[in-house]
Structures are given as C-alpha cells and as structure tokens.
Amino acid sequence: MMENRYIYHYCAVNGNVQLSGIAQLAFRIKSQADLVKLKDLIAGNDFQPKAIASLSYLGRENDE
Image 1 (cartoon, rainbow, N blue to C red):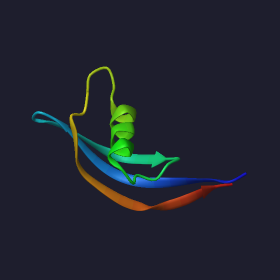
Image 2: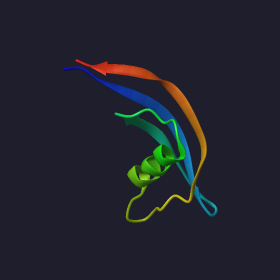
Image 3: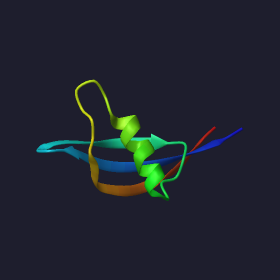
Image 4: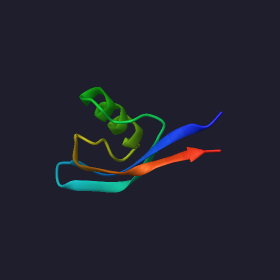
C-alpha cells in the first residue's frame, strides 16, 4: 500500500530562538490541531516551539 507524504518547510520559534527544516508528514496540515501536532513532532530536549512562524507546502510524494 502506498502512503502519501506531505512535504513542508517550516520555521518554528520560541522567544528569539528559531528552528527551520523540512517535514515529511503522513498527514496534511488543515487545522490548528494539525499545527499543534507538527509542533509536538518538532519539539526536542532543547527546543520547545511556541509558534510556527512560517509554513510552506512543497508538495507530495508517494512511498512505493
């Protein structure tokens, strides 16, 4: 079974600290709840994003 992956470029912020990167997600971001899920995925031991400052949809790929 093929699974779609949605590819986004994001910039997450916490105060004056920014983290940007590429996210390959199994879900499409359509709501605030989806943004919260993305923030949870980005979070790590030394970075807790407070907000997503920018989000760009780059496309979709199929996993074969």
